[in-house]
Length: 273
Image (tube, rainbow, N blue to C red; front, side, top):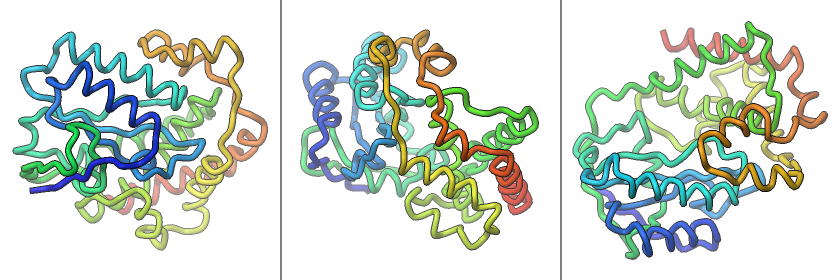
């Protein structure tokens, strides 16, 4: 049994999402929670939105669920026009075999409830046996290697944010793969820092600096198009519409940065063997 406490913070984003669910989509979900910096009211300029939908099985694949995704993303993109992922989603029946390698239980424990409108919500959860904590980590490491080999660099702020977010996720994914259990991202940095040399850890330091210094401006056209949730606009945002990477951030992604990233990836792969 897990008890999730209701969100009591001040975020307009959470308030609007909660109102949307309550007024129009209350039949679809067993529960909806938020996690990460929005849930803890610690959002900064860099922050994106993290939330989990627990969907009642009978609503899977329906037009109503698709409509909710669309309308909720309209709200989320007002908060972060460079949002690079949607909701996390599981179905109600997944609770009897909870996929901890999809969203670690410790994250769910630290999340906040935005639906239903109760003070506390009890979830009966049974964990799936033998979670595969490598299933996200290994493809990410392989992608890093391909990008380094191809001398790829982010062309706009959307690509940069996605890239930096992946790098900052590495400590928690690495910890989970080594320890076979989840950890909060904010705790993972201290938990694994000693496993790496200064050079190997350097990309995570750079990503953290960029996160702390995050800023960009949208022109009139971008302000309209980057708030559109339709797939075609998100594809265009990823490739063309987002603002260009500014010179300050670009200067941090030099050859040494990518060489250190190669060292980090190599060290993680060795440790996983």
